[in-house]
Length: 106
Image (cartoon, rainbow, N blue to C red; front, side, top):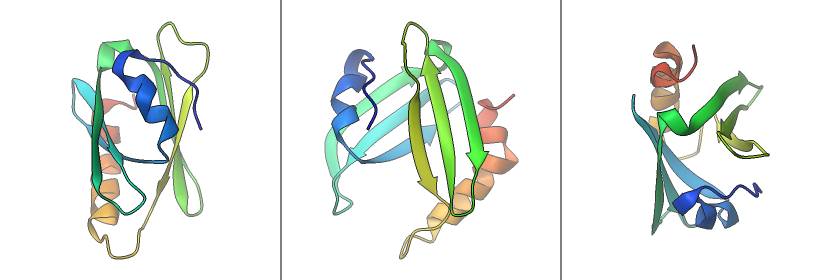
């Protein structure tokens, strides 16, 4: 688990599951329970607070590395290419790849 402290983001480091929404201006993190329900906790991170973003393709998942300005450590997220009973996962990943992760990868 990450040990990053970023404003409202600090509570999310204890969670293992997130929904991450990419917009041109922000990253939105929604904390999800192990059963897939929204926990009600979230963090909105403006893109100008992100120093580094990298998405590396693996065999069954992507490894996403995010470094925030002023933080010592980077946050590493693992994103499965497919999830059972969630057909939208593959479609959404394909969209992110086609759009360079909505402009995050230059």
